[in-house]
Amino acid sequence: MEPQAVWFVFDAGNRPLGQLLRTGAGAVPAVGAVITNGRDWKRAEVVAFTELAAACGFRRFRVTVRVLE
Image (cartoon, rainbow, N blue to C red; front, side, top):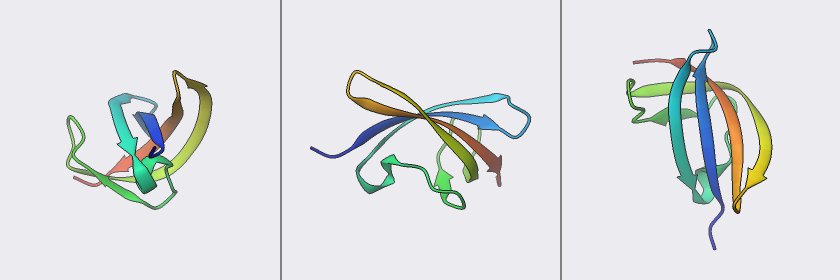
């Protein structure tokens, strides 16, 4: 089974930008990685993340991003 994770995405001002479900190799965030297709943004760069307690078999992360577009 592929790794599964939920990302709770925030900007640098601590404003929530939504949640992302990630699977496979991209399930764990990496600083500097560029993610795409957010609810109100097209591309964002991961600047920090913290792993939260797992729930229901999903790893969970609080991810801070810098919106690029």
